Image 1 (cartoon, rainbow, N blue to C red):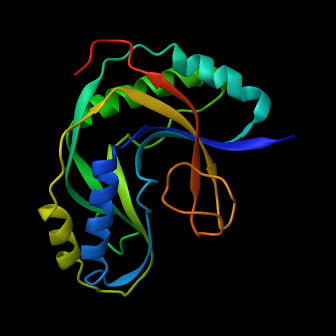
Image 2: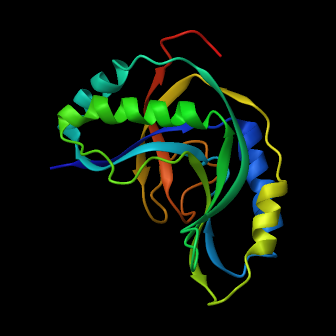
Length: 205
């Protein structure tokens, strides 16, 4: 049985992809650890991870997402931090300075739309964030203040969120498929293919 690794998320404009590239360049010299960096072109805001889904279930997922009623809103990144907030960090992320509440609301709508299809609600409360890096190894007692300062000083433009996307994720290296992630066959890291976009049904922001 063929399965697709899927997630639902919000795409980010080219200005954010370029901003991620600049932020990564600034962070690399000051991060006290080994990181797997999100590649520009791959950057998005995840609303719900679906995991490995049978191919025959995709049509039902698309129908459920198409039935969600929501209004476009303005998103602006700003600030950031690490997961977990205490102890040795595993993820570096940028926060939503504007539009965070709307992201939480939309994630809830996605949860409720997909629950009848067997996708269990998340156990943790949804927090709108944009993953910058996954920290593979960090020295115990390392000082992350410099890295945090770089993220807090970064500035981001406003962008209108008017669509959500059902993506297929290809893990690992050399999968040979992807969407506009600025790379070709053989590059390391995940690659994302948009299966379908779903526009906001309400007024524009």
